[in-house]
Length: 185
Image (cartoon, rainbow, N blue to C red; front, top):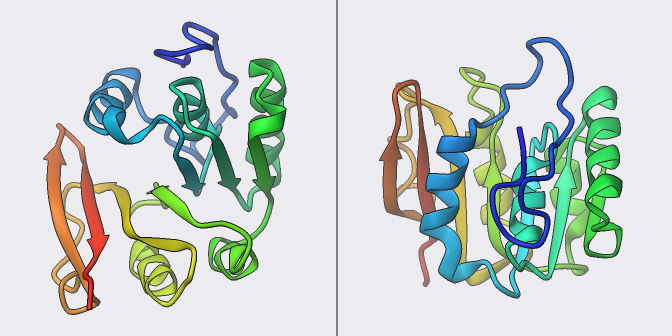
């Protein structure tokens, strides 16, 4: 696993051993960031269920002003801290080792984000809880893009009823990215 593009291009990143995290493959990460590239320079990026931190670090490498990483697991948070230090992005990154919904509440009034990426454990329906928390949060701007990485068969039938619009859906062999924005009004 490595940074694909930008100022930290080709730097290898640590990941934690075991099956507790599923790092996004370089190919899928590259596809995602090619779609997001016009929005990255100068953005504030929130990486929820951050794992190794590779998504937020990729954003910073490509020109994001700032990235906040939220990861509850102790080993994964230590891995993110090591990766932030290794990439020398300490001044543009913040790690919060806590539950995602608690972190969203904690960020209220401190930050607003242009892009929010969430990659929760599959088949636990955590994305629904997080999207509900985000909908009620002031950390969203009017045009914040929310990208959910999920298993292919994840049910998102509630999205519009919850107050979001689907901007795009990109499917891969085993998973997908769902691009959302909060409906205005």
